[in-house]
Length: 414
Image 1 (tube, rainbow, N blue to C red):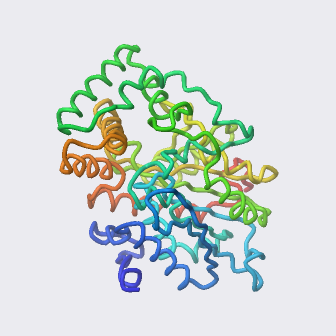
Image 2: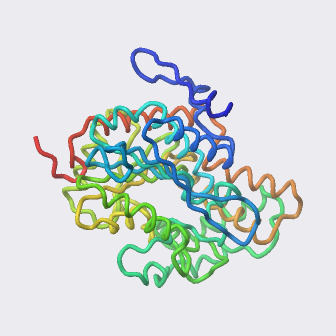
Image 3: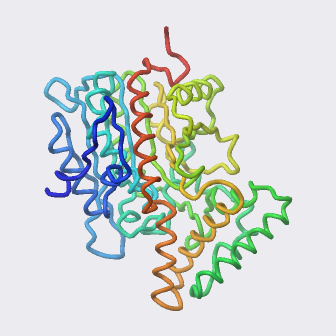
């Protein structure tokens, strides 16, 4: 395949991977179909790689051939059921559709450079490509049922998160659920920014009010904003049927990296820990991140965030293997930046995209502009962003290759 064979070539300089901006851009796929083909091609051409796919279906649009694809590099004694190593690294891309571009780039980097070193460090590797293929294909953050999949996973109680009540969402529905076609983008953006700022000011400039209300997940309005679903999505079955049995083969630690773009300081990697971590595990992750030696990379615990999500996959994954350690974290590369203005811009672009999807636009040109602004939040056509993402993913994986077993659990031995 010309695309898969010709892309992703990095210049090796000074003994390391020092990428020029245009080199970094080659890691990023053009669209879902091309990314899926390249992922499958990479597995076919990697010794010991076992490919699998899981079909995902929605009522519309029809005929899109949507699959979640996996690549397992275990290389045991002649069987994929016999791991070579006792540790497993899982990388997942695309739980939010337009964020799959960056996640697929990291997975390609791992195929291209890091597999041998990770294997020698004691890791088998499992990659999950486009866990939300409908969102990637159609460039929406949600799935084909308007469900934000990263608000849909039930960690423990099977009635949760679907019975969760977002107490702040009702007061913000007038902002989040615009009921008319999108008119002029500039004017409607200005009005939304102003009304959101007034709501923010009216609640004592408490960022948790806007953060929790709009982004923590809501379970009351199926056509609403950040809907978390009323039942488990197809991805829960995928994790239980395909991923849980693989996890059960390992006696050592499992490290799960869920790859995202959008949130946080621009061109910077933030490592988010899950809910309910013991202080020793928080400290161990902080130590790991500090040891990377890249000044821009930071770590953030849930208590340090302006909102806490429900139904997050990184809280769900450890429940599939409760008897042994699973370190599940989010890796997120920021695009617009932090602060009041970037937050307003982010909220407004997401709300306008939701409005355009359900109610259309005054003209096709308006819808095109809304769509471009929305996708640019997660996959900016910006050489600096792409170079930063590849560089920081590279140093993160390189550092992971050096840490002893269980270092991320707080139980590493000297």
